Structure formats: structure tokens, C-alpha cells
Image 1 (cartoon, rainbow, N blue to C red):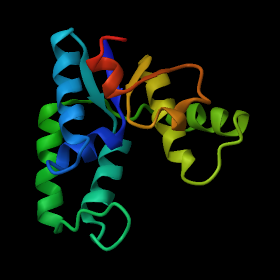
Image 2: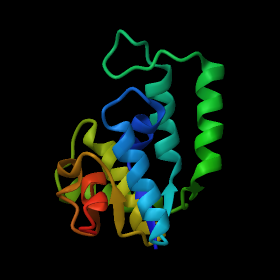
Image 3: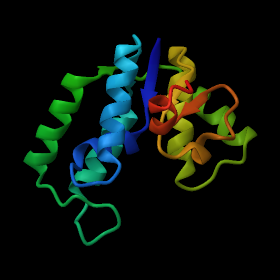
Length: 151
């Protein structure tokens, strides 16, 4: 079974001093032991680069140089299966955005769901289940649920 990782999982893996780092790492190890294949889509990489290169003074920024951010993305791509963007991703994104009244930055989350739908993925690992509650086509799981064996 393949499961998409939300970008917040990647950002916590990049921050060893984050209180959520260990949970993200352990949940991934648990999923892999259970035979799951953690996956990414290009949207994850775009979002990760934004966070990595955003100045530390700005919300959530890591303040990395562009070479550091590039090295981070190279490492991420080596660790996880990267699924490409299918050519019909836009209409798959547009429909739920209109149906669910998605606006603002939530449109990024809707794009992740659209990619999941096009790739036939049904599970997403995230720290922010509320961001995806409006999308009935997917099941969101948290690292805590994985570690407690509730998935």
C-alpha cells in the first residue's frame, strides 16, 4: 500500500530539534515495517523548498541557502517514492476546489488530494488532519495513530 506524506511530515524530518521530529521518523519506520510505501508528489517538493529557503525570521522558515535546500531535496527524493504529476491533474484539482469552496492556501492541500486521486492513493500521513477533513476520497492518519497501531 502506498501512502502520501504531507509536507509537514517532511519539514519535521528536516528539523531534528522539533518536538515532532521523532514521531514523524518513528511513524515512517512503522509504516515501512508494515509494508507501506511512503510517497511524495512534486507539490511536496515545491512546498519543502519554500520552507527550507524562507528566512528564519518568517513563520516556519529554515533559512537555508539554495545549495542547502537543493541538497535537502536530493536527500528527500532518495528516501521516498516520487510520483509524477499526471497530465489530467488540473481538472482533478479544480473539481473539489469548486465543490468544497476551497480558498486561499487550502488550495495547495486540495492539489495534494487531487494527485492522490489520480494515483489511486487513499491514505495520507499528516500532522494536520483538519486540513483534509473535507475530502472524503482519502483517509488521513497521524503519526500518533500509526504509533498506537490505530491504522
